[in-house]
Length: 432
Image (cartoon, rainbow, N blue to C red; front, side, top):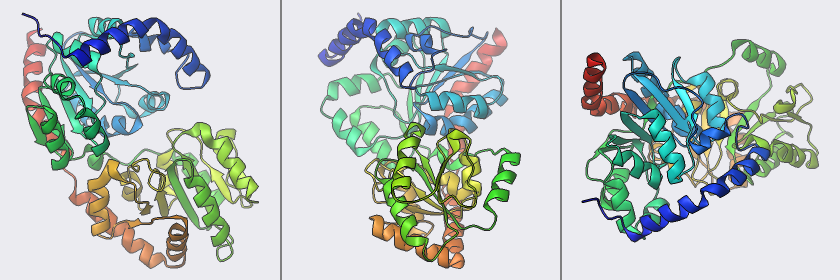
């Protein structure tokens, strides 16, 4: 007898089915605003743009750039074992990143909108043999559809914020039904494990954060050489993955600091590159000379603020940055991942709102491998201290690198947990 779903899930299925015709209009609007790839938007309706490879197929889904980057070392291991891998994500930036960062032979598609007909179309074509969902991007129809097809579903690098946990607890029957579809849940921390378990996940294991094992982002060596030639001996501070309000704080800090540091260059990398024009306007209004990377402009000697409003160039930016402020942390967005900046030698500053990476920042702060700031004034003061005291800045950077190294090992533990599933797929692959 088929399982009777909770009322909330049945209503969701009905609503998402009825809304499917309106998705075309939604996609058209998103294409106009740059949120969808106009050449690939049919994928959002579950229409494949590539054929399914023969043999067992492992499906890896990550919502956006951060999740995809976290999964890259794992995907490399899967490809090294000769498994076909399909990666899905939901943003244009992650798709652009996929072209340069995923290992050869990996397939990428946009995840379909969570309407039953689109999900069914996607699953019927790809017929995955194992589904790995990164962190917490769990869509009801996708989970139910994959579960109905008996696809083993595993959460990897699982994370569940306190905010999401509280929201899901308002609909306990819905979330417990969805999590019952999981074969296994591999979490970043014991806190995440407790939350998944409390919501209904039956098999939960702490494996650590895959982002701690990710390699540094690559760089175009020719571009790096040009950058160093342009910058020369200038002092540089970088604000990475910034949100609204944080750029104004960095611009104000630059204005105060340049009296003692006349050659100072501030590089601002917005979390959403489309905001570059507005950030440049803010800096110009403050009387600063500005250049935008998206316009092909360069950080020449007379430039005060360089807006790096492009995608996939953090490997370049971090390699010229002795000091990095990690965005999303003064603004209340939960913070951004500091690991790449630390691995490439930067001393890191962050605001108080870092719940997305709470364990990492707690370990860094405890080891004096990063420095918290609570407002614009404190940000300016700490930037000034590090600009005038390279030894203190270097000590923080080295402590941060040591702390990150100590926290690693998640990739090995994740592969060990997945091994029974991979062995089974290997046997099937040999048989076929």
